[in-house]
Image 1 (cartoon, rainbow, N blue to C red):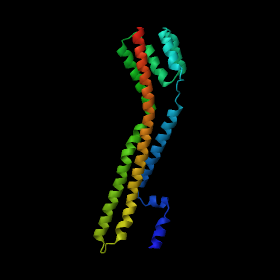
Image 2 (image 1 turned 30 degrees about the vertical axis):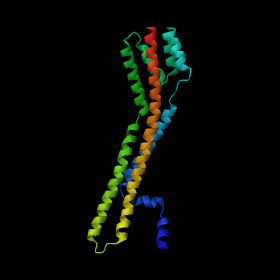
Image 3 (image 1 turned 180 degrees about the horizontal axis):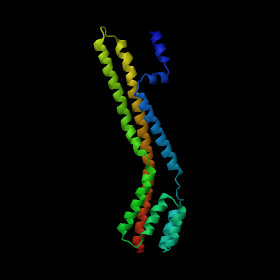
Image 4 (image 1 turned 60 degrees about the vertical axis):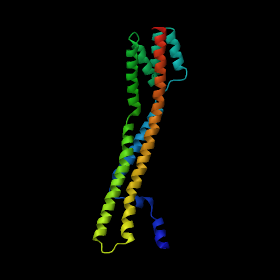
Length: 214
């Protein structure tokens, strides 16, 4: 008994994973894809230019003074998502407020699409990877019971030997799914924080031009 425990403890993680069967290949590919998407989006979000704390206050001051051309130049020189949305509002001054708001929302959606990128696939992987792992386990269990039906003697080793190998795919699939799920919601939280800031300043801009009747 001691020898069996010692031998099982000495199995490396790589050897253990290899016993999961051919489904480990697509699961491994899904893990690489999820890592790539998370890394690419993470560094993209951190690389995006952000306006300094004084930008919006300076913008509001220029609009209140009626210096629209200077406000537009400020937006162009700042050249970030927030300034592009506000610049779209300035470009549509003179139109009804509903049209201005609609144009700013459309510009905001374009910025959101750019920020989200391929994040959608992280959500897909979060759902697909565990199911793929379960498929591997179920197919393995079916084979085990088929072998039992052909065997003259039923032993614990006949059942457990194949079952622990097939459960590996479920464990790996769940691990990849959890990793993709957490990654997706982390990135989604970062994007939502930006969107909330854009929406707040867009509403303030609409209220501003409505009050001063530009």
